[in-house]
Amino acid sequence: MSAKEMINTFIAEQVKKCETCDKIPLELYEQNNVKRGLRDKNGIGVLAGLTSISSIDAYTVVNGERVPCEGKLCYRGYNVFDLVKGSKGRGGFVFEETAYLLLFGELPTEEQLKEFCEVLGAMRTLPTNFTRDVVMKASSRDIMNTLTRSILTLASYDKEADNNEIENVMRQCLMLTSVLPMLAVYGYHSYNHYEHRESMYIHRPDPKLSTAENLLMLLRPDKKYTELEAKVLDMALMLHMEHGGGNNSSFTTHVVSSAGSDTYSVMAAALCSLKGPKHGGANIKVVNMMKDLKANVADTSDENELRNYIGRLLDKEAFDRKGLVYGMGHAVYSISDPRAVIFKGFAKELAMEKDMMSEFTMYESVERLAVEVIGEKRRIYKGVSANVDFYSGLVYSMLGIPDELYTPMFAIARIVGWSAHRVEELVSGDKIIRPAYKSISSERVYKEISER
Image 1 (tube, one colour):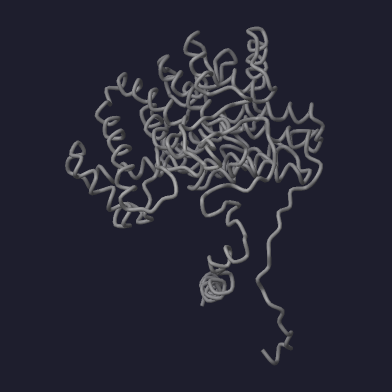
Image 2 (cartoon, rainbow, N blue to C red; image 1 turned 120 degrees about the horizontal axis):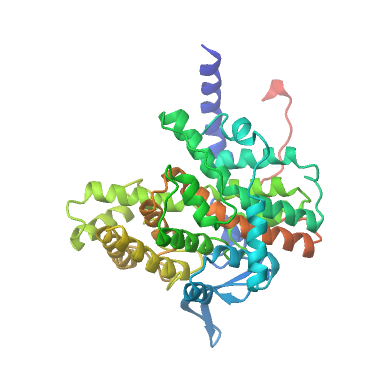
């Protein structure tokens, strides 16, 4: 038996023990009054902290009862609908303006915004030979892992990496916000070159362009993009920037920051938290589900066929057989996810420009029918609506963004929220975040090895 076979055999045999000793019956959570996943059976989260960065409203209280309402998301008290409306009214980009708001607590003046954009542009540079020596080495299809490795390696180039004074932390956060698009796109081009033998493009960013414009310019061989494409991507980044503080990756940011760790380690931890399919990786699941739908539904304009496919999804007979309609439902929202409502409008605009209205119509039909079928087949404690991931994958595909960059796009936006939460934890927190776990194990008598 080879060493590899020996290792695999040993692990396979021992895993059977783990499946027994690590399995905790679900009923024990209720018996011990423990909130599984820090949420009760109705999906209400345990209050683990306070934040002034953003807020989410999904219900109102009437006569002591929770009544679902249209979803509401505010950044530093400003409704995202108002931020979107304001940016469209003057024709500017909203990502940088909103980043300033989240990081510094107030909307910028024209002069402040101009200065902020200049700072981000000036910081959009990597150490000499970093792209060659780090990003292009050991390329991987998993660009999230590439990003994590790159960020941890950047700490080696920072003489103040472990300095947690706020001024230094803010410098680090702004730098990482500026270079993350470069790290993601360069990482993809390297993977595409070495794994698919395609041409490699390493364009330099333009300090005068917005984050969204730079992303499209860096990604495309000819550097070209339309104004609508840049505006739609800009909006996508803004809507993914932050979400209430209780999401998995932002909570991770607070937890690791509370331990006194450095900015690079904190952001790497947040990236690892985001990459899972239950968090930032959900958008690619929607796209793959839709590909499966088109492969298995003869006429995607036939609502009966669509309804049948959705039913098969829920019955674990289609796609990945997990019983889920990806992009539908949210841990907090019930009637609507404000991000999905906004995104849907921009997705339609882009579909019209790209002559892809039939694709958009299919998504719209699945969204509407899924609500009905889920209501018929599931006993749910609250309403179901499309979440931000439902249309984001469609938008990214229309923009020509490769699948491998879908979750990194989320990270490029969310690092602003993580930065705000890191600073908030360092300024306000004074204790390590350490939740309690109740042990259900009983005491056992030790036996000598010869008696086991």
